[in-house]
Amino acid sequence: MDLTRRRFLAAAPVAFTGTLGAGSLLAALEAHSRALPDLSSWDAVRAQFALDPAWAHFASFFIASHPAPVRDAIEAWRSAMDRDPFQVIEAGMFEEESKNVPLKVQGAIAKYIGGRAEDVALTRSTTEGLALIYHGLPLRAGDEIVVTTHDHYSHHESIRLANERSGATERRIKLYDDAKDATLDSLVSNLLAGIGPKTRVVGLTWVHSSTGMRLPIREMAKALKDQHPDVLLVLDGVHGIGAVDETIATMGPDYIAAGTHKWMFAPRGTGMLWSNADGWARLRPTVPNFTDWESYNAWAEERPVKGPNIAARVAPGGFHAFEHQWAMSAAFEMHEAMGRARVANRIAELNTRIKQQLAGHPKIRVHTPESPALSAGLVAFEIDGVKPEDIVKRLREQKIVASTSPYAVTYARLAGSLVNTPEEVDRAAQAVVRLAG
Ligand SMILES: Cc1ncc(COP(=O)(O)O)c(C=O)c1O
Image 1 (cartoon, helix red, strand yellow):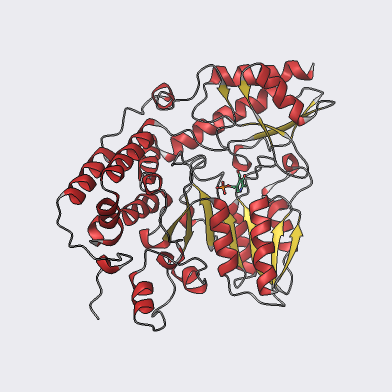
Image 2: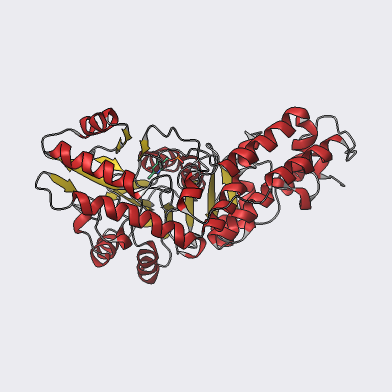
């Protein structure tokens, strides 16, 4: 049966004329791929953001402010879609492979993470990616997932909801009592000590938003695989991607879920899921996809889907906010232009500067490890006698945006990022010191 992409979801197929739709698509693509601005200085990078200059923004990791290249890309796609939604989206999704926009986005992500475009599934968030992994793994009663006490609500809940269906169980282990005292060896040995005979999957978080701890994932993945080659490793990578100099597709986990709307500055409501061919083959899709032609053909021909599972079958289908999803590449290209190592060094430098100013004060307890190798863009701390939410309130009175960590044990957080200057860092850190008295 000769089914073309045109028939995918088109209720009444219309011949693609290559006029308005193609014109709009090309115009949007062109606007979207405009030369990047000068990003050679941190002032030039900061100038890309439309953040309110009256405030010092130390919670940018929560959700991104779109930088100019991303705003421009969204606007280019939005206006093309508003002019002719059918033809632009039809051409971008279901026509020729060479013009397929999700594939181009996957290509930009793959380049940045050191992997293959076909191994990237586009999602809307870390949360969605984690749910797709845990619901897709072939687990059953008697199997166990080991996760840590340091992971986010989205991670624990993805496991709980998936286990309710599969009958698998979950066990939580602690990798440290206080993050600041942890070492590479203690992290690796606590992980290995937590693996039991029924453990099939381990869930970790690259950078803990509770404490600012950055796990040495390469070393932990290697140690795990050396001793337990059949145990799968799932990673929540959201606070590492865009903040740490890594080719994450080569780090060792079997599955990595990450929102790209935090450190990557991609549009709000975007994320990615990565695995390799074996990992994808093992996973069962949860949401019908709009990206794998074979899935559609099998449905139309009322037959089973042929071949192993692939990323394109796991990427959730349905129509999305495509102007956001398709503008993701602008953010990855911007990061490439800024340089992964340069970005990571700047973030480490700013956060080290915060830690150095808080260190040694008798009433301030910094929980984030001092070492840049075990930390990234967050500094979590307490002030004796002041509740974390009150710290945030008092800083807000001084036009400093800080946050608290949304965990059972809560700390105040300052996150130095590319939108901050060293002077702002000093102002925020000194405000904390004054608060401590
Ligand atoms: C460690 C961690 N994982 C997951 C999330 C949720 O991220 P997303 O909005 O991409 O689902 C957060 C939240 O900010 C987080 O801190």
